[in-house]
Every structure is written in C-alpha cells, then in structure tokens.
Length: 286
Length: 335
Image: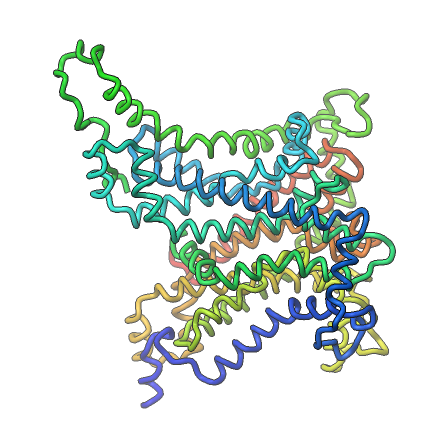
C-alpha cells in the first residue's frame, strides 16, 4: 500500500529518484558532447580528429587555429562576425520595438478591424517563409539589395510570432485601469506605450529578444542565397565556406564553428532562464 | 478578449465645446490631436508589420506563382516570357524531384518520430521535483541554441567512414566495427539516419520543454484519481499525461512537419562537396529544399525552382493535414 501513496502525488511533486538523475545526466552528456568535442578539435592539431577512442582533452593550439581561420583569404571571417553582430542586433532591436508596438495596439486599443487583422497575423504564422524564397530573391534583385546586409535584415524586421507573443503578454500583464488613468491625465497613446507598457513588459522583451537573436544569428539558407560569393558573408556562411574545397582542414572548420557558437553559449548562460520561460510560455498559450 | 479594452473612443474626456455638429469645425488642436490619436495611431502602430509582410512575405508568395509560369533563367533572358505549364509538366517527369521527395520523407520520418518520443521521455524526466531544476532545463537547450551550421560540421566528422566516432561507438556494441565500417554517405538509408540524428539532436530538448510546460498545467487531482484507480507511473504517462497534453503534441507535430519538409542546412553541409548542392554523388540525401536551391541558384533556372516551391507548399499542406488527423486519433483525442 505504501507504493500507492507515492503515486498519488502528481509527477511534478514527486522528488526525482536516482534513475531520473542518471538518465538526465546521460541526456545532458548527449546534448553537450558534440559541442565539447568541437572545442577539443578546435584546440588540437590534425591528428586529434581521427583519434579513437575520441580525443577528449583540449589541445594547446587554439590560438594557432583561430589565427589561421582569421587569415584565410576568401572567407572574410572577421568581417563575417561583424556582419552577424550587425544583422542580429538590428533585427532584434527592430523586432522588439515594432512587435511590442503592434502587440500593445492589438491588446489594449480599440480600432475597427482589430480582430480580423489579428487573426491575419496568426494565420501568417503558419506560412513557411521559405516558400516564397525564389520570388524574394527577385524582389531583392529589383531593389538592388542582393549581396548586401539589407537583404538579410529587411525581411526579419518585424515577425508575426513577435506580435502574437507581445499581444498575449500585454493582455495578461498590463492592467486596463493603469492605462485609463493615464488617459484621463491626458497621455497620448505613444506616451502610454513609453511610460506604462514598456516598463511592464521588460521580461517579455528579454525573452523575445533572446529568441530572435538566436534565430537570426543561426539563419543559414537565405544568407547563403543572397550573400555567398560576396565580401560580406554572415558568420554562418563563412563557416560553411571554411568547409568547402577539396581538402578540408577540420580543426580550422571547427575552430570557426566554435567561435561562431560562443556568443550563443554566453547568451544561454546569462539568459537561459528567460529562454526556457519563453519557450514554455509559448507552449501553454498556443 | 474585447471587454478589456481601455478608453473607448466614443467617450472622449476632453470634449467640452458643445454637442452640436457645428462644434466639430471649431475643434482646438488638442481635440484634433486626441481624435487622431484615437482613430489613426493604432493603425500606425500595426502598420510596420503589415507593410513588411506584404513586401517580403505575401508578395513573394504570390509573385512566386507568376514566376513559376514563366521562363525565368538568370543565364538566358532571351527565352519567351511565358512558359505556361511547362515548368509543372517538367516537374512531374523529373526524376530528381521524386528522388528528393523520397529523401525528404525518409529523413522526416526518421527524425520526427524518435524526436517526439524521446522529447516525451526527457519531459517526463524533467517533470519531477529536481534539484537545480533551472540548470537541467537550460542544459537540454544547448543543442537548440547551437547553430545548425556548427553542429552539422561536427556530426559530419562523427559520421565519416574511417575513424568516425559513430562507427567506433557501433563497433563497441558489436555492429560493423573497424573491419567492416559503415559508409554513411554511400547509400540512402545510412545517409538518412545520419541526417535524422542531427535533426533529433537539435530539437529533442526544445520539444521536451514544450511538453514539460503542458505537463505542468495538468490539474493535480487527475493524478490522484488515477492513483486511486491503481495506475503506475508508466501507465499514468500514457493514459493521462499524453492525452492531456494532446494539443501541444499536435502543435509539435505540425511544427516538425513544417520544419522537416523544408530541411536544408543539414543535408547541404553533410556533403563534403556542399557547393554543388547535389546531396551526395547520386542525390542519396538531396532534399526538396536543397533541390530548389540547386535548380534556382546553381542551374540558374528560377522559374522551375518557383514551380518546385509551389509543389513543396502543397505537400506541406497535405502532410500537415494528415498528421493532424492521425495524431488526433493516436493520442486518444475525443475532440
């Protein structure tokens, strides 16, 4: 009968046993090993790559490998990092501003057609953006933007997901009374946005900002199409360039890949709690 | 959701200049500003999204239809403007297309099913009272934040025929081994498994968190009732937890359908000769997204690539619909 009593608790109230920790630790190992090994190879000479059992101790050649990556002629690795920072920062800032603005309008303002327009936003969420990629290339060609960072930045400046996420958050967290009392004091809509909405949605801004930054930094297909062959690749295009050619030197490829991954690992380390929350909140609401 | 809007425009607090129609003409600039603020500012606030979506989302999607009916070759502008249905009839007879379709589905099945099952397991592990709870959750997201470009480079080395870690690990289990190593790039099935492994690695943790969130919103008394009925943990998982989180399961199935059928980066970079975009010497693992890239930007035939995009769109719609029905059934939904 004692086992029954243990089971009567909901799983989330049941303390984890040894097996749970063990299995979780194994999952963690699988999740982290490819990253760790990437670092090991990035710090080693050519021989470490083919070692079996695999090399698990970092070497002392990290700076040498990094130096080689940065000095390769046709890869533009240093420029690519700068480009990725520019693209990701601009896109993230713009997404945060425009999505919170639109989210506020949809959540708290009354205007004709707001319901239909919000439904439209949600519907666009389901359209895979890759499908118009051929025509997008032609459009960018007409604008003269192909091969420039503008082509990568412009389509990401405001996202349906961001608008949706912000709307949900503002509906739930910004009290109507607060807005109304500001109105009575004569505040304009933009003033309400700046003084009441923005301070209240800081956590949501952190979540959306992190998710957007990660997605933008990691984007590969569209930057490859519009930027490859130019002197202005993003870091993902540059890393893929490291691996092209007849004789690929993997300690260089993985050193480049590692450098391009570090900013995201730092972000996960600092903002992991927010990223987890963002993903989990999105799940319950959708 | 409409009952909670603030400050409806028909009750302006600042209208003190009489109530006749003539008063409108004598509005102060303050009233005008107020009216503008109430009537038009909301539209200005949502305008950026709609403008950008029309220019870079909707228009390309529609224009794609036009391009697919045209001869649009970057290397030969002399062809007649319209191609009629030529691109589509060519598509139906194109072996590369059907090959890519088979590869896409093969990889899709090998990745989606284990991915979601393992995510369910990881989620139920995380759905306990854990020490350092946040760190476990952040930990499973390591693959999610890792660029696919970077992780694919690592997995490409794992899956090399000689001195590859995958073959070494399988050798320890008595499969293959150093005398008879698996050549992961020599036939379809092995290439599919290798690529599906990368996809699984990337998305298990993310899906696990989605499931975890749903699991934690299940009312606690449901479990109490089940325990009284004598259901053990395993039975609880399948009889209670999974049916209760069914909407999220559907959501993840649709997400991974949309993502899986557009798979691009992994098959591209698994190929040592990535620039050719052929997905192996004989297209062993060329996916549709990759074929679209090759046709459009290597063969420079944008018209044909646009036709292929439409075909892909249709396929995604059909598969997402089928998946929806199937998952609804399997996970015991009564709705």
